[in-house]
Length: 475
Image (cartoon, rainbow, N blue to C red):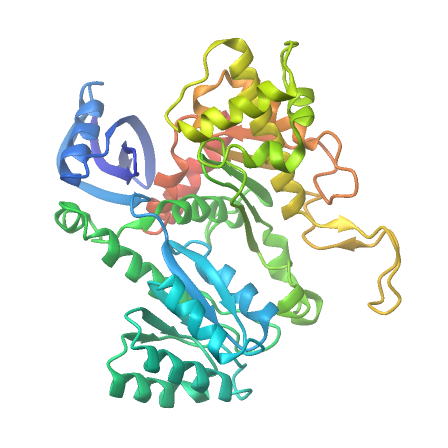
């Protein structure tokens, strides 16, 4: 077997690699390997991951193309400055969704200028997202915030994504004061639209600059076919969007939910291509808009390791006991102690059936909570002021979703039937949530290939889509 494409994922703990053969527009998966990430030289860990694949009988073409994603650097710290608080928060979240940034604070013009200065000085962000004003709308907020950034002599890179009529004077001000900046189109040109892709790409470039500070990563990046590294969460989301939407030449599979359960967070992403057909008036205003094609929520206090205690805090230890798939004699104190152990020792592997069942139950509770926070709900009471009737569907509507993709270590290392069970239980009693009406098909990424297809989909969209459709059908 001769591979002509290899895709790496450089993580904080492990560097993974997946090998493929691309022939006549079709991908064939040949093998995957991993090795501990070598922070003293990234190339060493990547080489060992490739050798692990070679040990499976896979050889590599002399002209083998290399691609990569990376999560080793963590997210860039980002502060968003804008005009209206809800609009700025919405825009900042959408911009950061796949770009490798963490939104640390959202500050609007309603906050006093001294407070805004304190935020920037305390957080010392890597990136400042300077938004505010639709095109032709308010300009004073962007100018005021630009003056403040100059007065602080900020070392952050400023993404200038405000009202287009304010951008030129802002840029001139930054040039005079030696502030690093990148100009992109307004992220909210009208009250109905978000245009986040240019800002997201600018943040992605900053992400790449940061991770190349690690020893060997600059050389590693230069060895890649496109000399770019995609943030790993972004790669996974790109794969789900490609699978849902399809390409010009090939239909996707339609609406889906992606569950990404990690040690620190539980991320829920939904891709609903049918919403792209809505008229602007049907989509509504940006500030309450859950009707965009792609939508993601991140629960930072729900993880299976570094934020494990957040799960019993959110649902209570008795809920975790009820979610266990084995009839074990477990007390609430044992659940709390187990969560504390996982948080204190992130590399701990649960021992015995009782601990393994508790971990799966914690996963079920984390997923269930995150899903209900992501999905919309039926209004329980009427609101005449807002024109809402009792029983009306509010927020993100997932009732017609038929497929759920699951990414995360617990889905790979658990028994398949038990892993399926812990996800399926989350959909059994939706209550007032707008979750799928029928039990969806749960697809486990047990070969850890979604990230690779997200990376490859940028270059070979039809081949990646064909592979994904076959992959999910076999799962």
